[in-house]
Image 1 (cartoon, rainbow, N blue to C red):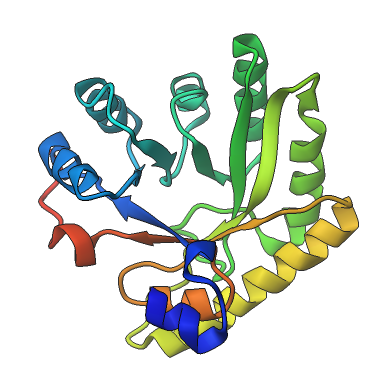
Image 2 (cartoon, helix red, strand yellow; image 1 turned 120 degrees about the vertical axis):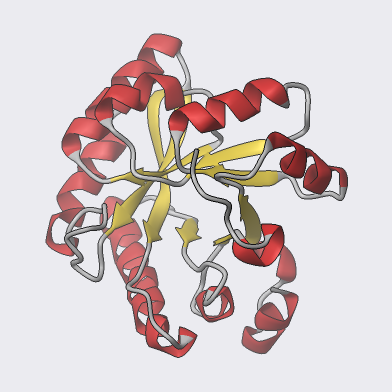
Length: 221
């Protein structure tokens, strides 16, 4: 990460590392936290909440990075420092409703399906501006949703250079959106184990790395 920042003239502290810990035990998270890693990402609500309960009292910031069903919104609000995967009006409204009930401001990112892949979550690029305007409106008296930026999961390529145009495009979409909304959108969550350096060079502020940190992912369940 530091080398990628140096290549593109960015300060290393401008990029945050979220260690993707899904399917790995809480003991692995605790060991990494003891080494100084603070931010961890989970993709499944029940698994994440169980780990949070097991690691209560640890200095950990939890990120929810997986696809999120509307019925699970209540469990996510207030338990995660950042929810990366808002991709529909229905989900946004449910998250905002639960946040207002809890009287909190829940930071979120909008996930964009730049590759137009049917098997992946994310709002279509054509619908991004409308969804972003809605999310921004779902805040009242310090409660609701706090739109922090965008997230993407580009198609899987053999070379990180093939993913680079998607990272560049997400940055351009974020910049245009921030200008049109008249508010800063500081976060770009993009880049994983195979391509995080290219993502950093294209402006990522959050990279989501699992395999390089924890090793091969154990089977689910």
